[in-house]
Image 1: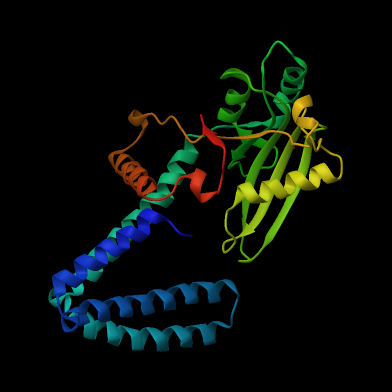
Image 2: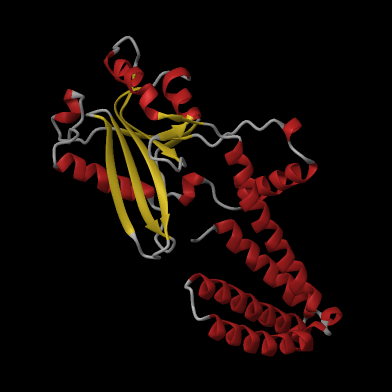
Length: 297
C-alpha cells in the first residue's frame, strides 16, 4: 500500500543517513547488522509457521539448530561493530518496533471501549423510520463501515448515528465489513438481507495482498443488486430517473471512540498517544479503504 507520508519520511531518513555516514564504507556496520537481524527474524517467523503446520519435530529442531547457529555467528560478527554505525540499525528498528507495538495494542484498547449491540433489536425502529416522512430523507443508499466480528452485531455508535444523531432516513442501509483471509489473493463477498428491502450486511472476504478499495468493490455489489432487481437501478427523483441516473449513495465512517483516561494506566496512555501519532503520519480509513464522497461523524 502506498502511504505518501511514510514514503516521504523514508526518503528523508535516507538523506540523513547518507549525509551522516558520507561514505559507503562507513555504512558497513549498519548494513551488516540490518541484514543479520533480518535473517534471524525470517528464521524465527518461518519456525513459527512450520510449527503450526505440524511438521516432524526432529526435522524442525534440526532446521532451527542449523540456521540459528549460522546466523548467530553472523550476528556476533556484526554486533561488535555497534558503536561504528550498528547503533543506527537498533535505533531505527526500535522505532519501528515501538510503532508496531503501539498500533496493535492501541487498536485493542479502542476495541475494549467499543460496545456492540444486536442488530435485530433495532430492525423494527429502522423499519418505522423508513416510513416516517416527517424525518427528512437523508439519502437513498446509506453505507456504514463496521469492524464488528459477529455477523449479528454492530457498533452501538452506528445505531446512535442512524437513530439519535440527526436521524438518517434512507431507502436502504448497508453495513460493510472486511473479513481478512489467510489466502493472500482471496476476493469474495457475501450479502445478508437483515430486513428485506431495507438493511443489508455486506462482508468482503479479502486476502492481505488485495487492495482495500471498498469504494470500487461496493459499487460492484450495488451493480449486482441492481441487476437482479434487489434494489432500484435508477434514482427516485423524477428529473434524474428520466436520464437513467443511478440512486445516490453516502458513506459514513465513525472513528471516534470515547475513552475515559481515568481507567487507563500510564503505559496504556503512552501507547494510545503513540498510536494516535502513527495514525496521523499514516493513512486514515478514508484513504486506506479508497472511499469517495464520504463524511466523518
